Image (cartoon, rainbow, N blue to C red; front, side, top):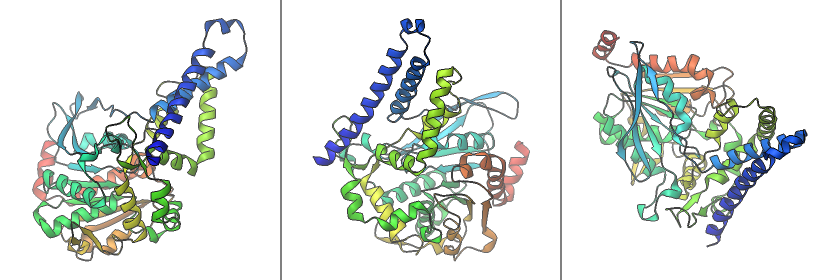
Length: 421
């Protein structure tokens, strides 16, 4: 009951701040105040508008907002989002561009389950759609999943990925971004042992903690410092009565968001202060740079308690992936069993979430894979976000990943792609 009351208290604080912002905006916007030319009313209205928008976004799942792409024929092709596999904790969805010939490149983006929705990879999807057929893992908010659906931990996550890859077939190219990189590697190794013909063609790991001890960051320091008992006591809460997942133990999205923002508190404070001034001056837009970023950044989701705790304990503390000692459903997963899947790692030089070396460690674990099927790239001056959605991704990394996929595509498929082009 205590954990449920804490969850409801956080939601109450969020709701109250949203209401205060809306109230301030409404009151300071009264027409009568126009007769008093004092900037305090504009600033108050601007503060209210920014505050109300910020706190309301925290409980809204963003839309994909990918309406169309321009095809080789110069026409706009409408993009529809289709659910191919529906599961309690996450779906496999596809972005289908109507009216164009199907692309030979087939890509599965594995989105992180680390507090944000899969829409965090919206720009990544947009950049890949003109050149490939794209699928993505769309994880659900744990607060909306009834307790009757059961648990969901790192082993369940790995099995979900295995099923999704199996469904898409051996011509699929997997790109795992950040948190899911170790589990995508484990899922591939699981298929290599259990069902070799279902393995993906290529596996690209972007900024993931394969070996958290390979390079020190604030994230790894936290993982070493805190005990599992402390995490369960102070972080884990039970979903309140407002949501379908009432009673489910979760790591709340609002608590995660406070941790995210505290890491760069000064930067966020400055960003919101500057936005309030811009709104007061009438210089802000509904989809300006600030709103575009924070509408996505502030939209957070709950993780199941067992997934969060097992990630900290097994991936960061015990380093089960890094030591090649990970088990799924009682079966040991041997990463050395991967012998045919081409694997590429991508890291950012300035990545403060998953520092250089953490992801590269995957290549040393692939003892059964020939050197010709291994590749790595370190992007100069790039931070964590930049290597999968920023300028570094668009200008440098995306072409390298597509080339890597093409280089490991059978000659017959490459010929067909050239003929299609």
